[in-house]
Image 1 (cartoon, rainbow, N blue to C red):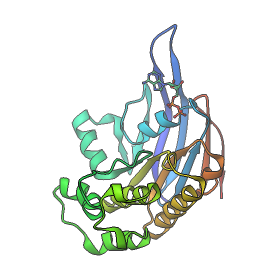
Image 2 (cartoon, rainbow, N blue to C red):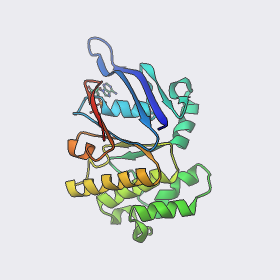
Image 3 (cartoon, rainbow, N blue to C red):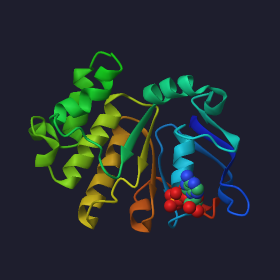
Length: 226
Ligand code: ADP
């Protein structure tokens, strides 16, 4: 298997003594291409900080993140912004859809913003896989939470990113819908060989991923590969 993402001895410190917080305390890990990874841990354990580092949204105090052979924190801010836009897809708890655009336009928006041609066959495949074919003309406000999250996943997939980072993607969904959405993330990971890293505080949700990485007090405290 090909390693896609590598984190090397990540340390992130917030604040100064006496209010210093070590949010990440020497995290090293690797993620393979096509792997669906859940990072699980209680509130305050460092999950969001780790996800932000893996996506180049924030810089660590020390350590490295290498994505597809590129060392993120050796880039300057402009280079990092471009790299993120081209290589990293995000799915958030709050969906972050554009309310005045219909489902189709939401899905293709990032492709258009980057000035790229839309691969219609690919988008159609994603739309079908996520069960959104009948909803393409609907506005987000006419969709359920689970459907809105499926649109957000489709939007992330459509740009063919190297990696999708999902921050508590089921945080606003009931348990049955959560299972369904995670099931679809897993299907898309398989069908499109899409690497996905998701954070969750729910053990139940984490168990649906291929690999579970446990984090506590800014350190990896366990993991399981299925
Ligand atoms: P989780 O996502 O697991 O809830 P976080 O990564 O958000 O955990 O936070 C880890 C620790 O770092 C917590 O103690 C949190 O209070 C602290 N922290 C996170 N972001 C900041 C920040 N911007 N400034 C200061 N402390 C922060």
